[in-house]
Length: 619
Image (cartoon, helix red, strand yellow):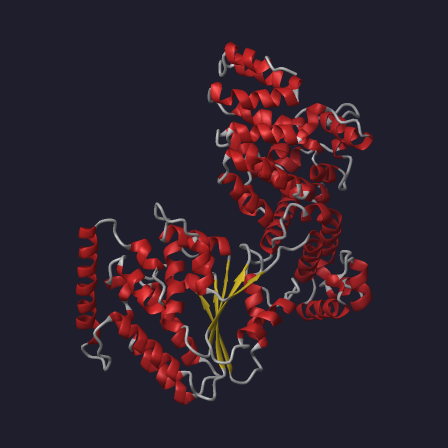
């Protein structure tokens, strides 16, 4: 099985990115720097951080430490927890001179006075943040709405500051009149500790920030900005940028009358250098699938040598996918580097992956984590198949069915329904599937199978094994019964382009709709199909305005049946406000909309008067 941990072998070939980030992080003279490494969940950010860390191992004077932000999710005060974690990492680092370790130990002992998170009311922290950073925005967003509440807030701040002094500072050498000065004193001492000529730069890698709750995300960012960002420090924060934006908007929602894009301003203030990890291309996913299989079965050392030779030959940047025979040309027989007891399994699995990897690459959205999960599911089903049926089942068919479920769960269920009528007595087999497939093969497309005629579904149909109608799939569907009639969580597996488009649709108004539809036309067919599947689901729930689905119906002929089916699934009444939209659809395709209107009438969701007005359209 493939774990979800960061890989120590660069199968994603992120070394160029690691090199750029590593150099950028230490390129400043002494000024503090924060770098954001942005990518979707599962994009390989942790693997990239590992490579960055490796780049510093032999660099004198560069201290690199790693902190997992998720470790502090359950701490009452994540700010002080992450500060203490950093100080302890520095105190234990082998590159840090012994004389400096004593200073870090001293700082650890003084962390108590920074526990403002547990002592200061929620309105106080933004005020302190504003005073320290010189940015008034947190104050504006956090002050109460009336004068009386503002007075109470200021009094609470004053009382709390006094409490902190009484509780934490009476036995400390630090004596000051405000929490702000205490923050500055801590930063000053931390910066003074790093002045040693033995240290050129401290690089702190922050991982898994996007797994934390919104409050913890903000606390971590504020701890970095307020307490830790001093001369000679660089923080490299790996996260999904959209998760950070969500956290900011949740903590500091817009105020009526203020048109502020706070999430963008906040991120720009916190992070000076943003670096975005691109999604894997279809070719990259195909290569990654093959390499993951080889990693599982080859001896570790020989696999590392293989990856090094791929990098040396620059096979990963060529326009064609890497073929197995190419790898055997540069490293010899791969079969010989697989243990004897695993060779039969290796041969079966690698043959299946080579067979289906092209179409699989279109379902996995350029996401390494999704690639691993798909392989884990496939291997699990293969083992179950062996236990239940021995060698009777074709693993190529199993892999193909798993891909169909990821592409379109509804079609997966429909194939199961067709298969229930499999004719064992004649050569008819799965007659419905055969008619559909031959229609694609001969270019004679039947409107009854419209959902099967999308580009990537047609590619799936033509993916080996092709003549699926000849195979009774009962046992395959038995092994996958837990996903039958289960809607896949498609929205969590979307490409960045699809997510951005759905975000625009979620904030849509009528004047913007034509532009959105025009931009949808420019999407690649795979992303468009994902967006349309989700739109249809929203139509079914009544969550898409009629003016928008009417425009989609008019412009996207291939999706007309799905849009109409979505309208029929929604049980709400059709009233006068939807009449103009249905008129637009009626003009675009009279036959389909007449069928729709008849069904709406039969279900008493529309009146005959409205139907008559829709049909009374001047040509």
